[in-house]
Amino acid sequence: MCARPLKSVLFLLIIISISACKKDKKLIKQAEVTFTKEGELTLFKTTTDSTKITIDIEISDTEYETQTGLMYRNAMQNNQGMLFVFDDVTERSFYMKNTKIPLDLIFISDTKTIVSFQKNAKPFDESSLPSNAPAKYVLEVNAGLVDTWKLSVGDRISYTL
Image (cartoon, rainbow, N blue to C red; front, side, top):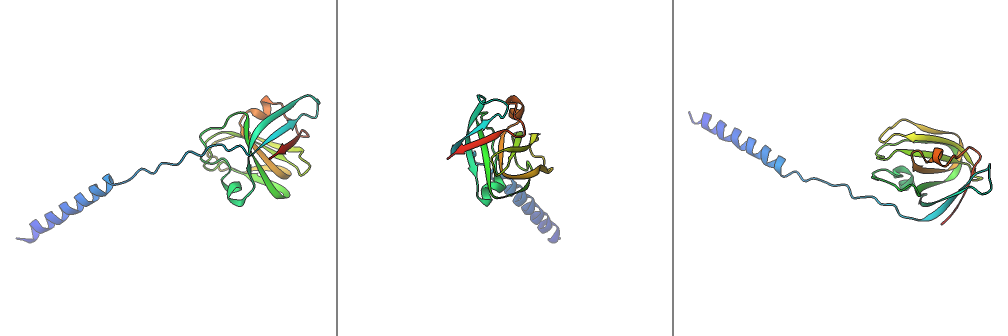
């Protein structure tokens, strides 16, 4: 007859322990990742000598920085962008894993000439976004800016740190 109350007490202790564990769960909040200006980049239109667009850039040139890019960012201003600088020239492929903001990707050759675009990349989309041409640099800006700025393949960039 003692076994039944003992089972009931053990069952009750297990339930209390489980519910106590749920109450102790801590909410881990992602730290805000903010823009850090590391240089300026100017886009030059090949069709006109007078059209220049200048933006502030954050540089991504280490393996960690190129892997994370603009992941976890909540927003970026239209006068800001991230410039990926690679050691070699090859076809590139990006994706939007953990990226919260829609982006335009501008692929740029070693001569600093725009070779292709991927416009309106969707947040969190892990589909491949290829350059379709060899590139040494990739510039990420807010989605829609390639069209707003009327950029074309053949336009050029320069940047200073």
